[in-house]
Image (cartoon, rainbow, N blue to C red; front, top):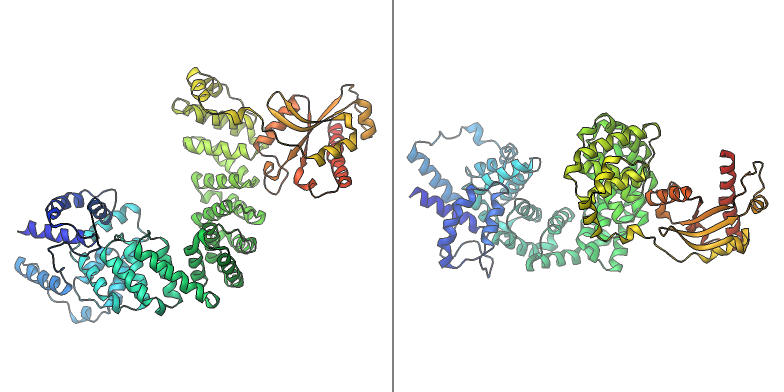
Length: 621
């Protein structure tokens, strides 16, 4: 009988998160409950119970299975529990007066897990306000737990005999709760894994719709935060729409920065242009009130909305850069990710973060630094001090690197074309040694990526190259589309550039759209005889060579350089190196700077770029 009773109680525990189930399916469901509860290792029991029920056909959201007319109440459970304890001899002495006089709030704060809270509920009949606070405390106790501990605690919570009673109480007393208690109850229920389709959640959503006009800013902020993470359904969508309309109407009077940001998150990237402008203007009007958390959250909010508001981003960037030492790892990384999603660049912000990381390198694990380096690489920012400092750390202990760590480091250092000067050879030798240890396990594509990165850095290790040239690797790689890697991207040459060059050195000396070796595209090649060189660029250091000079004029876009510098990135750097080997003298022309110039100004700029470069080369010779 005891086993049967336990099975029935467990069944009711399942049904608190389910919809109506046909009577003839109840028996089969009952027989599945116990194994699922006891085999719950990879996820909390709540989610297992939800997934168990997803295969059944439901028409309406219900609290109980058909044929069950009433759930156990707190009063009934407490009295039954007392009788059971008396029968088994486990009944304890009544609590003393001192314990009886301890306020409920104090007892609640002493609870350190969801089960502790449920144990407390077992001894009393909570009011509707205490129900909300209890659920919130249950959620709060799990926040700082590890994922494994959280799964275990949620499993214990779902098996607790008072668990279903507490949520029944929340459903019944929802109409009597205050606005903020309602908001916190819904938030706690969702955070604890209660199915969004359950009757308790759907009841809360309906009551919230009816009471929405009674909410103050704090309650609205909590509700908006909860709705932001909820899946779409009829009641949730209706509440979201009502909240949007309410907050849109109240937008001019909103004084809470978090509420504004939550509203922006709620609208997301589907916000109409007019609403985007209103939200941006409101945020700018409150910018003086931004705290550091506000600034960090605003960056992620703008990324969610795909709203590239440079004034707002600049304000937030300044706040973050000035307080970078107070920002935890996850928030700093999210900040950089948001900047990349918005295609926003701020040299002061990036420099502050990279310098802080370089100066506190011992605080960070290899993986954390690598995450930052990959974000900087994606942003095109060149963190010289961080690259130097991390290379020194890696040189000391290269064997600590995993295979993915190795590939990520090679990608970042090669893409940013970083030269470690005196430490370059030692760094590359260590990277090669680690790479060779992983050769037997590497795929053809990973091997190609690693060898390519090392070649950009001017390093050509024999073992990886020989492995790459093996028939099985070549055969696999030839099946892939490498056309974009092997052939140049030809583009129309800027006519203003060609015209200005011809005016500078003569029409016959300029040839445009040149492809070298079938690989490298050159915008213009200037061929100068020794006499022409001396006329165009008189110098105190004349060349003794009689060979014509070939100057490769390369149009360089901003993305060809590291952000905020003229330091060429990997593809441009290797192109320059190979053209020099082929006998050309490459000259980089920032084409975006010439587009707004007159023809005479272009000629002056090109003369400085080309012939000052030549003068520098002659001095070096």
